[in-house]
Image (cartoon, rainbow, N blue to C red; front, side, top):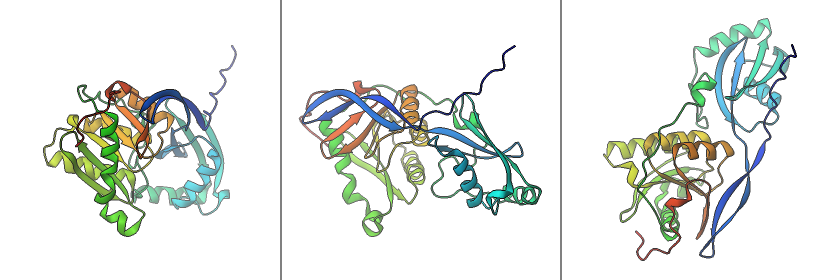
Amino acid sequence: MTEAKPAPVPLPVTPVKRFAYRDGAFVAGERVVPSEIAVAFTYDRMTHAVMMATPADLEDFAVGFSLAEGIIRAPGDIGTIETVTTDLGIELRMDLNAGSRGVFAERRRHMAGPSGCGLCGIESLEEAMRALPKVADGLTLHPAQVAAAMKSLGDAQQLNKAARAIHAAAFWQPGVGLVALREDVGRHNALDKLAGAVARAGIAQSGGIVLLTSRVSIELVQKVAIMGAPIMVAVSAPTALAIRMAEQSGITLVGIARDDEFEIFTRPDRILQTVADHVA
């Protein structure tokens, strides 16, 4: 019997189809977006954390993450590093030298999520790639409404005006305008804050759109799907995995939204190709 070969590591970038809205018209085309994959850090066969990352320079990632987490003091504290590709993601399997095993055990008892971590507390590839709920249909927008929604963010970002280093997540409704905006140094934290604010206010999230001042990675799509918002718009580009997850959840994913231009990566049917007479 021939032994099965391990699956190759995905490429760090991938081309995707999209519709670009420029100069008042939609144009079909293609854009290269970064790849994103769940990467599990395991030490002596125990999973410590799962991060979403671009699948490149993975051994460097393993050592750098281990140093930053305080699990090792030097690269030599790791005996071996094995990269294992599965259907759900990648495992970076590390064997620790004897001196680092006690440090790892102690570190696991005092885990805290950094501001930039979108999957803190998740300890398996299955959790990271969990199935998402489908969002409801019904909401449609005109291109002018998408532009108006993004333009409404500027004056509302009070913390970013002061510090120039703060992300924002906002909820916008047609006919109403900007309903809520929350800011945080972490883009995931900003979206969590927004979800809490909208839920506490009893606002129907299926009737509005989520606006983001960051790139779109899978964990942001996961959060929007759980909120139930059918459309999300971001100033930057999505990752390939974020696009795939948005498609599965039925979310209209819009990126590169700047001035009067944007690109639609999934469910373009919710963005109507006629100009709106009235914009909130």
